[in-house]
Each structure stands twice: as structure tokens, then as C-alpha cells.
Length: 56
Image 1: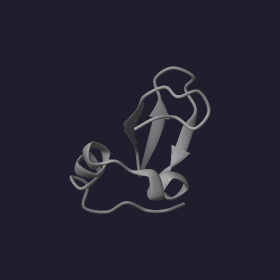
Image 2: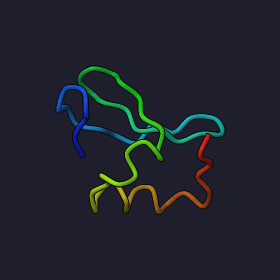
Image 3: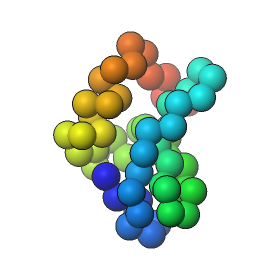
Image 4: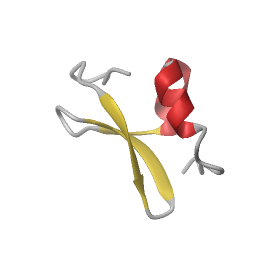
């Protein structure tokens, strides 16, 4: 999945009580609901591993 800001690759970043997507190039973080419409199959499969994702 590509970053909206710089076209870098987004990776899943999990921290205490939250899951975000972060660009490996520019470090921009996105909440899941911000990019939900753009999720690709690979990222969706990773997110499916988490039992609960809280949209904060």
C-alpha cells in the first residue's frame, strides 16, 4: 500500500492499544479509518490478524 503523501510503502505499526499505518519513507502515520477505502489485499490480510481495531 502506498503513502498518500510521498508514494512510499505503508507498513502496519502496532503499539500499546492502537494499530496505525506508517510510511517507511516519510514516517507519516495514518489511522486505519483514514485509508480504509484504499487498503490492498496484503495490508488487509495483516490487519485481519488483530482481533480488535479501535478507530480513535
